[in-house]
Amino acid sequence: DVKVTQSSRYLVKRTGEKVFLECVQDMDHENMFWYRQDPGLGLRLIYFSYDVKMKEKGDIPEGYSVSREKKERFSLILESASTNQTSMYLCASSSAGTDNYGYTFGSGTRLTVV
Amino acid sequence: GENVEQHPSTLSVQEGDSAVIKCTYSDSASNYFPWYKQELGKGPQLIIDIRSNVGEKKDQRIAVTLNKTAKHFSLHITETQPEDSAVYFCAALREKLIFGAGTRLAVHP
Image 1: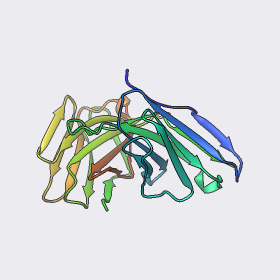
Image 2: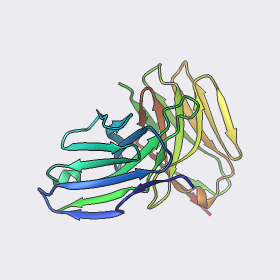
Image 3: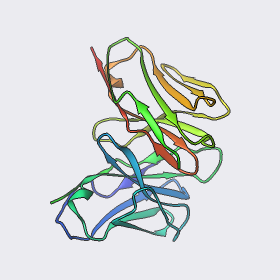
Image 4: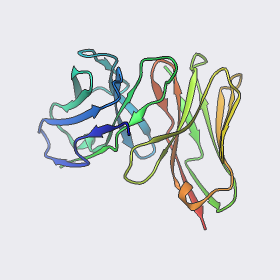
């Protein structure tokens, strides 16, 4: 079964800490995405990547950065965690081909910043 | 950029009734419209999708319709069951997926 795996289901971090959220996909997908999910706001795109070492800002990149050193791994970095970054974080991947636009999501990481 | 609005935010139905969730999008160049179901504690899962060259698509009890002129698309679930209870998200693809705010569907036995 194809998968997007997020390394942690739950994380609790202190304000000011540097936080790494890891995502790995086994589908050989070119495209990877990081979203955050908040009640009433749906899923908002933070960063995305269409290739190794490539990254693009999404709609809410402030306070975040990303790293994609290998095709299967896409990391989200909170440089200095703040309480307003408490949220559910979802990683997704998709193929670059035009026959299948569907995104596959991981199970999410619920991050609490205290 | 693309903006997707989704209504209603909550929907409560009796088992066996139909449920309809509606979305509008702003960018006429969007060409792909998926629907995702998110159960408690899980990531969103694709349940059905439609491309801009198709007006309607059906898969057993779920169907999606697309009106490109009005920039509307809708999810229809017939003969609802308690296991249909979840949060449903619509989305539109221009260069990347933009999601609606979600609809929490509750199906009561």
